[in-house]
Amino acid sequence: MKISLLSFGIAKDITGQRFLEVDLPSSASVAALRAMLVQRFPRLSSLATVRLAVNGEYVSEDLALKDNDEVAIIPPVSGG
Amino acid sequence: MIDIQLLTTPLDTLGCISFVQSDDSGGIDVFIGTVRNATKGKPVLRLEFEAYEPMAIAEMRKIAEQAVEKFGAKRIALHHRTGILEIGEAAVVIAVSAPHRAAAFDACRYCIDTLKETVPIWKKEVFEDGEVWVAAHP
Image (cartoon, rainbow over all chains, first blue to last red; front, side, top):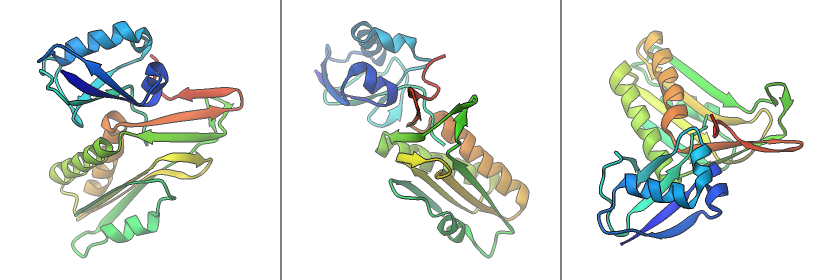
């Protein structure tokens, strides 16, 4: 299955692109995507936190992803 | 009544205050987050904000709804700016009205403190010799 990956803030500097399409085995979990991302972009490990939001919501790591989900890499937020 | 805005133009503080005025409220509390000219003594030239827009708006709305629920706030305006901001400009304006002042203060503080924890907005500080995404590294 394919998911759309969005990167913001320092995560965009690390992945090099705002939008990426990622291929994953069907029903892969958020945790599995996280492992794949850290392997592909090791500098993500240097961040204080990395949250993954699915379709605009913070989710638990065991959530099973679906085809065409939009996943955002959320590095430490710093609004305000 | 809640007004949430993510804007690329200067924020309208007086507009936020007018929005929250209501006859059943006895107090309005306003927080304005502005661009400071230095971080740890190092001069800052400007800030650049970016947001995951639909999620940022949804999270800001959740926070305002929670502030109404938890503190009995009557009306809340929560406006955040994105793009390039110069020193002294407002990055965020939060106005809250409530029947009594304690609720207005508490709700306003809850909004800014929670926004800084959960809303997907990022701030880059631009210095003379480089740029830093705030809070990115431990």
